Image 1 (tube, one colour):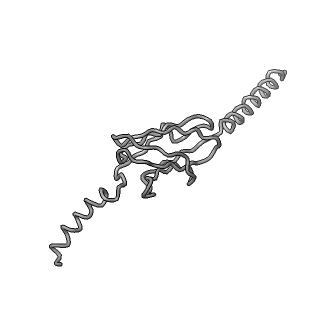
Image 2 (cartoon, one colour; image 1 turned 120 degrees about the vertical axis):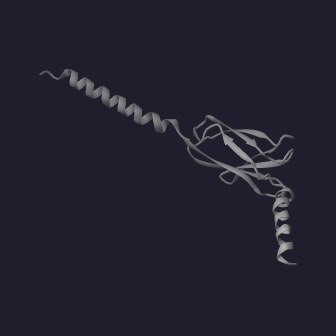
Image 3 (cartoon, one colour; image 1 turned 135 degrees about the horizontal axis):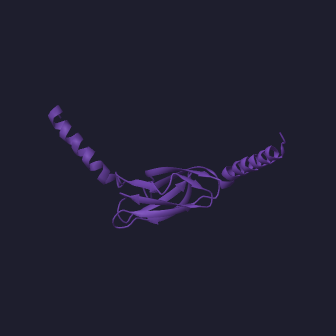
Length: 136
């Protein structure tokens, strides 16, 4: 084979390989928020999937759920996180095990936010009370 024959074959292989592999080439996952609070749901919208295909969702590498995409190659998923931390949601196509798309979500415990605020408010209240009772 000469150079003139190799290039068209190479280009053809690039065009055909996403179709043969069965993995959606333009899949997207869009979380309703990339930051969330513990016990509050996050909605994930998936698009660009292969039509009517089974997928498994993994949270930090652990199987979470399985679903079948619509005939339009779409799906949605709601996840409620029970603990604070950073979660990686990964979508794999069943049968091939190929990673299709992934997203990160950082989950915060609301108590980690509220307790410092409460301490600050109590401190301000105590200081204001002391200042109020100071006689000049």
